[in-house]
Amino acid sequence: MDFERYYLDLFEILNVSCKKIASGKYDKSDSERLFELSKKGRYPSILSELAESFGMMTVSYTHLRAH
Image (cartoon, rainbow, N blue to C red; front, side):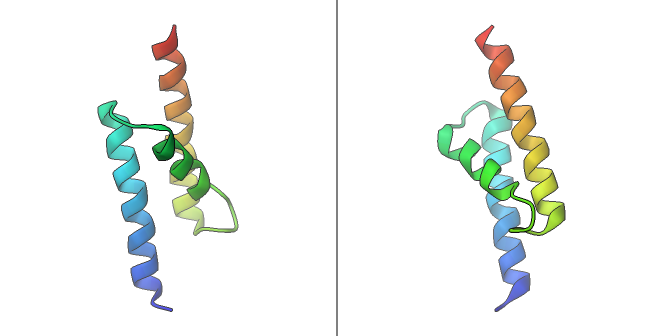
């Protein structure tokens, strides 16, 4: 397995989802990707921690927008 390519692909998934969320142009699948990537033990810890942080920001943003 080419671990470098694997990591780059994972970070690209995270990057694309985060950009869409930051622009306000995201859908449920973007949030689902973040929560999938936040699974500890399944993905590298730095990636899962970043995904978890962005996921929590998304939840906060969605909540603020609803009120």
